[in-house]
Image 1: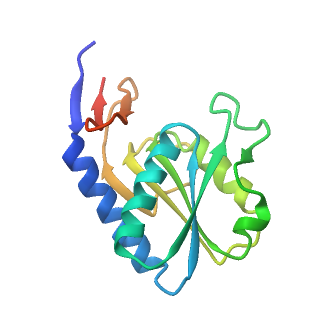
Image 2: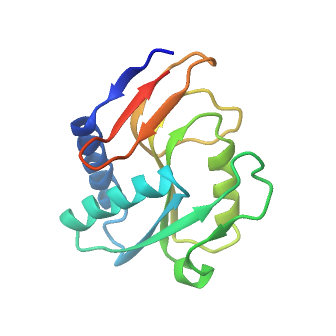
Length: 165
């Protein structure tokens, strides 16, 4: 199966920094925010956003990993931080690719049980094939693809890239 690179290492770094600036603009009045990445690639992308944000802003960032069974998102969802850590704070839920919206909408639903000051979502690639009414507030790239194509994001040292297969 052929692979078409849609984002190279430098482009991902640029989009990550742009998203960090957008988050800073949105949360400029906050002293502390939570960046919650959906386990695996979403969390890796959340870490990159957190690092970029901390290099440009005085905001304290708490990093949180969200564990969702992507095959069965109705299963128990857990996080690496107790809910008291993100209660009454601004929170950004991060994933690498927004495909059907299933994972993101269940992640949003989980955090709705905790009072938050502000709640936003961020993704690196938005595929525009949603079956749920969920959107990314911050996105690296919007991509119209066929339902038969698959977007893969790879985070490797000095070789981050996203490709379509």
